Amino acid sequence: MSALERQAYAKAGGVAEEVFSSIRTVHAFNGQEKESQRYQETLVKAREYGIKKSIASGIGQGASWGVIVCTLGLGFWYGGKLVRDGDYDVDEMMAVFMVALIGCQCLGLALPSVMTVNNGRGAAYGVYAIIDRVTGSVLIIFSFPEVRY
Image 1 (cartoon, helix red, strand yellow):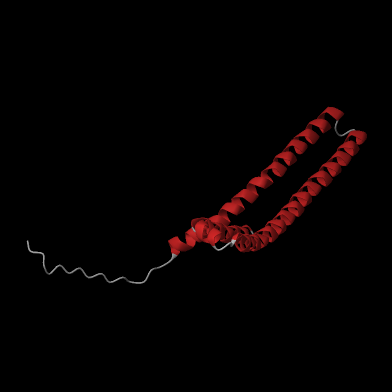
Image 2 (tube, rainbow, N blue to C red):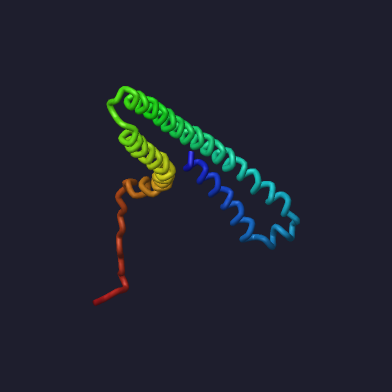
């Protein structure tokens, strides 16, 4: 979705660039409202893509933290059972619990970085398409009939 959002913002930027490059003509023909409306219309698509991306991101992060919290709850319950049965003492159980808690927090904090990498991959797609494109054969003929050595 980020590639679609980026394309929509690029289209809106193109409209703005076009208007600013010919601002005298727009002003002379009193076209400010029309051009403003055209710019607003191009931003609507970008906004829709941004909202969809944000909803997907929120659901993903919420699900991730939900799994983390449920796992920690399960671990705390099982640790309490082990302490009650005498297999571990409280210090050992809390040490294991804190290691698990900090590890889960680190995983949760890594998720925004994964999203950033995905955005970068989306941006690089166009560049790689140009790099991977195979050009047809180009025939160049140089002719210098007036040149003598």
